[in-house]
Image 1 (cartoon, rainbow, N blue to C red):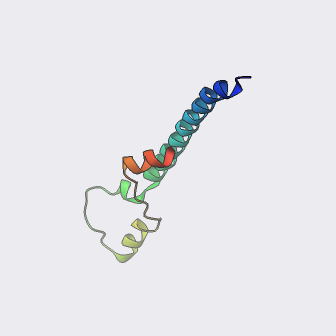
Image 2 (image 1 turned 45 degrees about the vertical axis):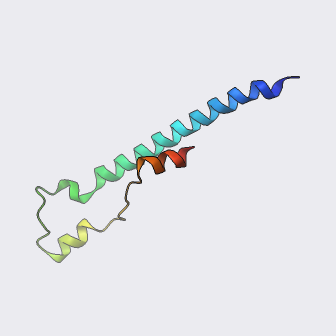
Image 3 (image 1 turned 45 degrees about the horizontal axis):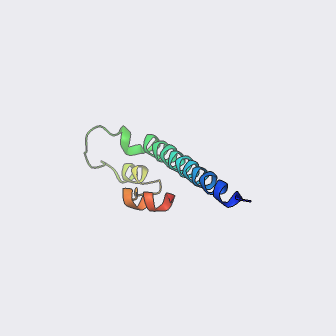
Length: 76
């Protein structure tokens, strides 16, 4: 039987589909983080006026987006 030959394209397609789903999941999470970011609602790029405002701006985890090459390597 030649089942190995027929599974290879199926696995390749499944792998591509999984990487697409992973990239969409990452993009969705990143967009949510950016939309909920308190700095987004600050007009101008002025420094915070009070220490409490500084704490409010940096209250969430500061997550840096990885480089495109790193994201590509993670999805493969």
